[in-house]
Structures are given as C-alpha cells and as structure tokens.
Length: 54
Image (cartoon, rainbow, N blue to C red):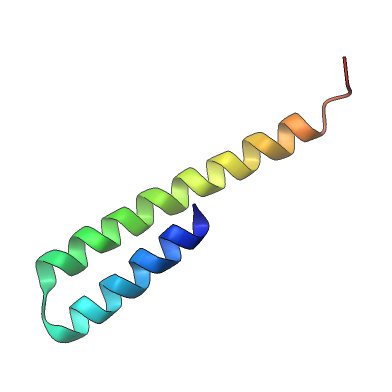
C-alpha cells in the first residue's frame, strides 16, 4: 500500500506542475488514503506478530 501511496503522490506532483489541479487533488487524496491504510495494516500485522502462538 505504501508503494501505491508513493506512486499517487508522484502523479499528484507531476499533475500539479503541469497545471492539472483536479487530477493533482484526486491523486493526492488517493495517496493519503493509501498511506493511512498501509500504516494501519502495518500496525495490525506488527501487533498480531507479537502474540504468542496458541
């Protein structure tokens, strides 16, 4: 998910430099959403990995 966030962030920067503000805003929002999902998933997997086996 983090790689998707970086990809959409780069797309947003390029679109903003070229003047496509609508596409830049959408790509920026998608980058933010994917970054949050990636961080949440990373935390969940870290917590589940520390639990002793049943």
